[in-house]
Length: 261
Image (cartoon, rainbow, N blue to C red; front, side, top):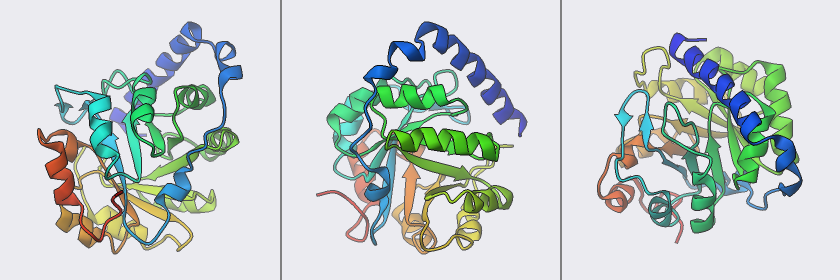
């Protein structure tokens, strides 16, 4: 595992143990109900899908959006998104699980908990806070961990976005029968972006897999070109950097994309 990512995951393990003490699973597990918002169905279809992200900060960019208002952002996203991603990592992204119900209340789309998920507790916590899907990164999980976490998510009717960043992880995702595979265009070793990663890896996936291109998507020209390789896109920083969020969304979307009415 790369140094930066290893540090994040080590810190996440500390966070999880502290959160378990603060909010034990036994204190809320009986209140968890399976979701009725189907992440897989939301991304299905012939038109391009968009997972639009609520992200205040990131390790590579620092503070991205000073006036971060999840409800206001969701009120705009709901007109364009197939699903909405919410950063929940506190230390590196200034996220929070508290943002999940805020976004869920405003937008009818499935809500993805974007976190460095390493423990089943995080999935139960995400569903308790109204997430409908979770991110599982093969760069931080072995196959057995992935199977365990995926099973917990599916037991709650939650979807799983399986993230890969290289050929080895892609082969694992195929063997693990991942339904939705996110190809991260960002190199986690140096935070650089290479959109060719989507072009190179997507061709290896069969038609029964939904392919999402993640990171580095800024323009409709990129969306249009990469839509030959991917079924959809996860877009975060490119939106959060814009004062006029709706204008940027209109620039990324067109009649050929999957925008809600």
